[in-house]
View 1 (cartoon, rainbow, N blue to C red):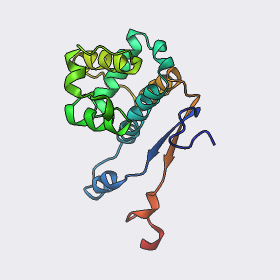
View 2 (cartoon, rainbow, N blue to C red; view 1 turned 90 degrees about the vertical axis):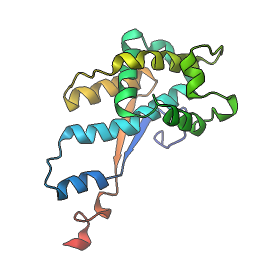
View 3 (cartoon, rainbow, N blue to C red; view 1 turned 45 degrees about the vertical axis):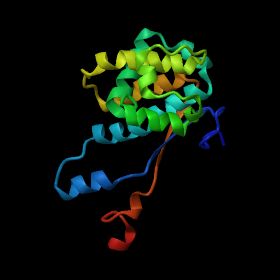
Length: 177
């Protein structure tokens, strides 16, 4: 029940992993798919959801020390397009900041005087982002473990990953056998 999307007080971060077109194309090219690919796909979906939760309930922002802000900023840089003007602007509109006239340029300028704790947090993350370009390769397990910890700092008790629609694509569908 707490897993439904759009429930700001839910205790579970629901991350959907439902687009398998890229892995299936790679399989057709005889490329090896690694666990790292799947973890990256999950994190591309999960990081924006985690940030959206912080926008909805910013009381947990204080849990993020500088080290955890650097980690979240690193995930923002490597798994999302939220450190780009178009990506961030679209995402801010999606989560309801369109009416506040906030954009990537205003956040990058750091001259935003706002009482909005989430926007101040986002400004900090964007300021840290250029320093996070170098990404230490870690195992898929370490990457997911750290993401789950970031989710816990954000107020979630668990992260559920919904893997669905796998059987809707060739060659995985039952009709192709």
